[in-house]
Figure: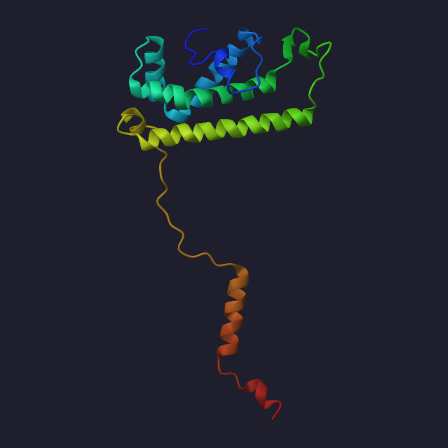
Length: 187
């Protein structure tokens, strides 16, 4: 499969992925993460520039740094989350089946949820780290500077007042006014 920025060897230092994993199962998950998560996070134009330079083996030093130090960790974590969700499950003509090995014990649903949650947290960390790097280095990445900027809403909150606070203000006002009528009853 062409146009993959990482391969299964990149997972070895970052995850608990077995080196014996079938790359045919892993590669579509990598491509999905690249297209669905990485490209929008770093902007499609930056992604396409890095991908083209990577394919042509012409990475600039800036894009080499971006790829090795920021995109790869993010992409590994994103792909691994995809893998955790689909590992051990295969589509057949009769539906989706789960493969359970002979000598191995399958993790429980709760354990898998915890593991997946941990790697989602790592994925989000590396995504934010990658975006922060691009935001801090816009001179080196003008394509990022020219796209992917969310529109800022032009509004400000000037006053938020709760019902309870309004009630207490009314009471303060009531008792601060000069009210002698209730004293007349006791005089």
